[in-house]
Length: 450
Ligand code: NDP
Image (tube, rainbow, N blue to C red):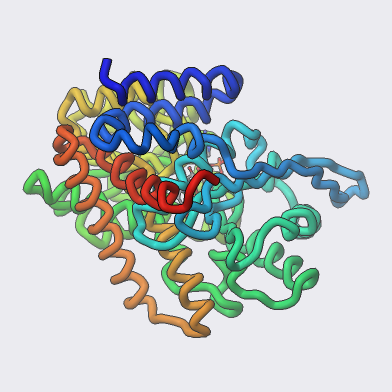
């Protein structure tokens, strides 16, 4: 065993002993740790400074009660979280997720990944994440408002434009950010840099709504270029039908691919003419409807309810973009995609592919773009929103979009170069983990034992 192998294995044992019940967190940690062994072999000073054990322990976690009153006058209670994982390279930054599955393990896995992702963007932002087990589905606007006001009444004690800047994630879009911004302002006065993903009338950035979806497609474009390919004439499947999925589909169509399937948690739609983005936006952004209603507008399309043996990954396509949620694509799904001839998979969601699925893609020579690199466009434009807020200025859509494009291209190139340097050419998982880690490790090293 090399010194790096011994060090990484011993830290992972400690992490498992202390967080054994946090399956998602351990999965995210394992993926990163495996990649970092050659870094510790090359730079033993990071072992001497015990960087890894410090990095894997969040600087701070807060968990709090969120009481609110529903439309029937009944008192409801949810649990809120914020994990402030690492401020080594800037203020904590990362989204808020409202979904019934939210617990400390999910928030910690997302916060841990965010450290590396934010570092890869080249922007000065640390890693954080938060959310609640509140389910916005089926709630009225007033219920969502009362819940978010209560949530922010507690969260505002821990955040600020130079301290910690939350944004959206699953279940948190423009409506929720608006209510939370209003409540923060009521309690602290106007500070427009305290949240990103804001509406355009009160400090939001053009192209933030589109950024994660567009970004994952810009990243995939680089992956295809490295294989001598492009989007023209390719078919694609995109899971989910939320913020990330909608704008990934829109950009794929613009660049010449045809997206034939998308989904929500109840099932998937297949439309051989290509998914109609305007219908999807109307259903999901305006009506908050279920995906099955797509076939009322496009009777040629088919809806298949979700089941264990028939999901969106059985649809034949050249490209796949998991854009829904964690662990939505397992090894059997990966094998189905490979059998159907997929050549590239880029992750719009966070940790959508299991570790076994990633192994299947690598073994089959599929180009694989991991979340922390491929979906970094959202947080990158959030950092651009922070820059516009501090500069009291607003850039055009084209300016932001072209900065986003260049950031995604740089992330690809840095990840590919790190993979090459550390003897794993073409392995963007290894490359992204190493490139993201090195900047954070150097900053931690420079700042002493804190
Ligand atoms: P949204 O809430 O806008 O959309 C989530 C979509 O995923 C919905 O269509 C939802 O369907 C679907 N979904 C959720 N769970 C499942 C499931 N088990 N099976 C199938 N579909 C499911 O969230 P976002 O689009 O913002 O986020 C999607 C992913 O992208 C998340 O992993 C998030 O962390 C990640 N991400 C988001 C960023 C952003 O800027 N928004 C930035 C970087 C990453 P349903 O309505 O039925 O629940």
